[in-house]
Length: 405
Image (cartoon, rainbow, N blue to C red; front, side, top):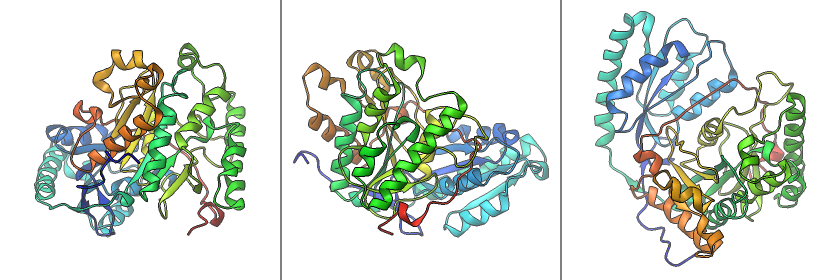
């Protein structure tokens, strides 16, 4: 690691379970689309002051969605939670409230049908959120170490530069973070088809290697059934030729560290090191595309505890996320010049010969550590708080997936 990158000065908010957050937010969570408008209106006056809206649109029950909402509402970056229910949906609102309360966070559930409708629910919700926000603002921070960080990575809007600049630079940052003891999570198995044997060779145990190969084989079957691959027209317009080429670029985000575990959405790393996140549902194809856009993957990385998400883009993307900051790494120098207001790191310097992979990796590391000292990402400054959650189905991971545990 470059001597210029210091780990000093990290601060966080201590939670009851011992984890620390680099943000101290109020999450307003709607439990059905019918409650989305009320939740959004509750958050609106404080949306630029750390009040974020998340939620599940579906009315019918789904164990994955309930697990995701529990993980997100008890994320270390979240300090208090307001749940907004219409009242007749099938989501287990009281179970979620109990789980959030057990995590040590203030929590309240507003049931619109019982509160008196839209205006009454908004007024009650805004008053509660304002009070909790004042309490959170008064909370002191504590010292935080780099080995307490969890960092995820995703790529979107990939082009021919992504696999030779932005993605491998993110991989170098991962290697440096892991060297500091942090946990790092990469995904998506549908964009790692063809790389499974390479990943298996990096696995901490042979049994984990088998699980990695199996997860990618599942993704290949899933997409074959759909008649669709994780390859968009924008990828081709940007110079990518095949899913194999895109996969090798996506794989580069993982760096060179040993792979110590395989997670599914909502699972948390058990120690520092590199983890693969399997985002493709188990069983038969039931709910359509595994992730309908990049923010679905970002939400799953955050549900696994990611304090920060590194987002590599060549074509250009403007999204951020609720709950955890998104660091935009631009792979293409022309895209960076055109969209610099949305980007945090110009990895295109590698292509132009003005920086090396190691130098940009150190720059990414510096940005991540800066977020633990109070700095903000471009997407945060611009008010991006995108969030989406859909139906999925997963079986629990087996012991081979977390050999260290």
